Image 1 (tube, rainbow, N blue to C red):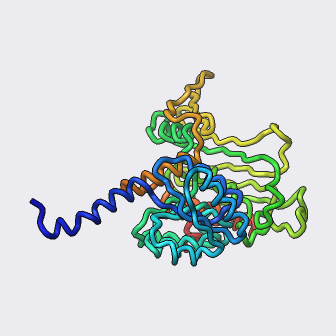
Image 2 (tube, rainbow, N blue to C red):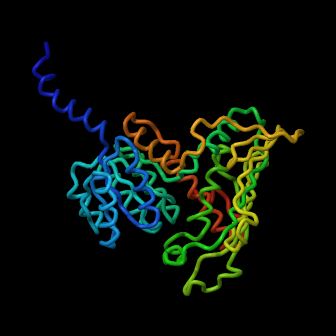
Image 3 (cartoon, rainbow, N blue to C red):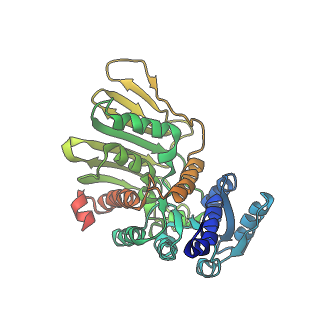
Length: 360
């Protein structure tokens, strides 16, 4: 027989169980990235999009229409603060706003005790990154950063192989992100005060993977870059169109990374390779090639072919339900963002920058 206390608690337990069935989510930012995240959210079982917010009413309306087309209903807002004040029954927030807004929005969400999926970078300064990380450490909810490549099946399989030790010790990570320029219609992409420049906004993804492979932050960094082709294109541009960086780690391990925006279609593209004492791993292909053989080994990737963003969001929902620490949590995102900021500082100031200096 249940005690009076148990009887009184029963409705709350039932409500908690029901909430685990459907996680009510608000989306802040319904632009290029936000609409992509929303499409995946609407396909995930157990996710209910209850509100969408964007400073442009037409984008918020378009997002709400997408929710309605999937049989749901979402309130629209143009002010995220009002949304957080009025939507008392949401469980989580997905943030996909311009980089320079991340600190303010993320801390506001975390301080309300909500779970948060926050697009990278963590922030645009070391101090702001630290503030967000510390808010996440204090928060009741789960915070997961949008480093979705960690959830890509091929890359995840490659990382499991590296960390298993079967390929030996890491010697060198070599990466290239060569492609065309960013979408010209998104103005803040070209203002380094709003995006942190292209290392922080774009190159950060590959640098995060390499740091994950090595398992620790770098000791120092140096590099160079600038704008060679797209000078004042679009007008007022302050971001680079190319750079190269070298990071040095304990034990002589290095990252060698090249990134530019004037690559002819299909010429070089993106490469993410980790060289180890017993061979090399291609992160994108999920393949290992022994150092003394030509034959590559295809690594086991159970979810091969599935979209990394979809898997990242699914992991976020699962982390909420089970109280798990995300693979890409706030502490990991803090290190990833500082690595990118470190590279940017080395380029701008044309000098060697140390990790000890970055941590202050």
